[in-house]
Length: 106
Image (cartoon, rainbow, N blue to C red):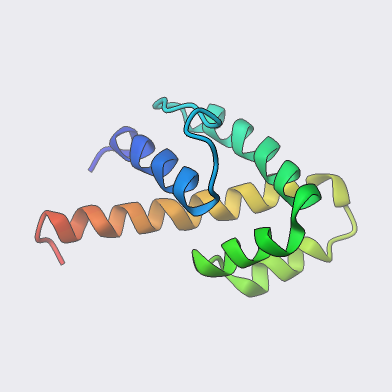
């Protein structure tokens, strides 16, 4: 399974799980670009509706302990970046698992 093949599904999941407009994240095979856009969206979602954002994190099953550590870190400026990385990590795992099930490899 090629990482590049996962990115369109990753973006689709991010749009769905965070109720983002379809064009708010680029559907490209460039993870750093997807990450940059997600960081901006995370910062925006945190400032607009923090409780809903946290609910979305728990719903997609991002590690609660890691989220708590990030939210309570001393360096507040990197919170959106670290949360975006956790989200991407979890979503990629979900996408890979779904692809393996579809291919009958599970």
